[in-house]
Length: 76
Image (tube, rainbow, N blue to C red; front, side):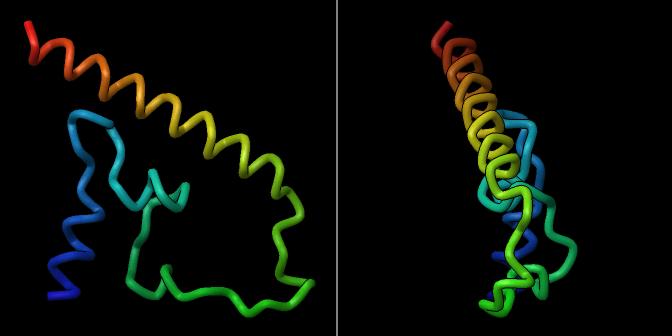
């Protein structure tokens, strides 16, 4: 069952134009190993955390807009 869930979460949906994994993590997963957490060591911390956070906020706003547009089309 985990393989099916992983495959399902990698599919790009027409409503959002992104896969669920890309919306959550900010990048498309290639293997289940991409989900493993990084060690909590200061040298592994992302140096551009603010840029990544801004990117994720913009991505979520874009996805929300696409979902709203698709819902309006369905309503008509």
